Length: 164
Image: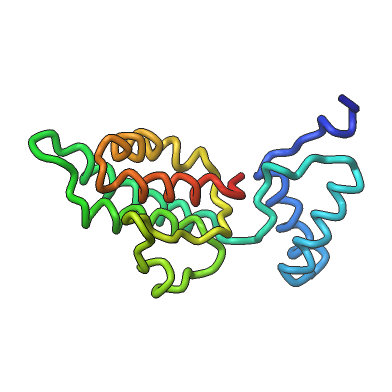
């Protein structure tokens, strides 16, 4: 493996570079993002795990956390099977929280053959937020519940696709 391919930075470093471009060089946010990407790329930094979208991750993390709390509440009821409606809504909320653009409501609520749900594909959420919220555990618990199995897999795929 070449030395250039192994260079990495943290999300915080990238965000600080963008902030510096905006504050010190009076760039617009889009221009500052583009400049930061060019700067790090020219230095051989691997940006694979960096969110370069410029999205406010604080708002995103709050939305993800709220969706995970709803999902945990629906899944951890031991007396009865998971509430399907609540679980489906929580999975939709989770997938929505992980996207850059608001999904088309008709498309996301349109059930697929077999009871699955179409999820937005443009996902850019830090997986650690989901992991810390016990998201994988909750989604895995739904795999054993046949009516929600396909929707849970769709949600896992949506959350993992293009995540950082």
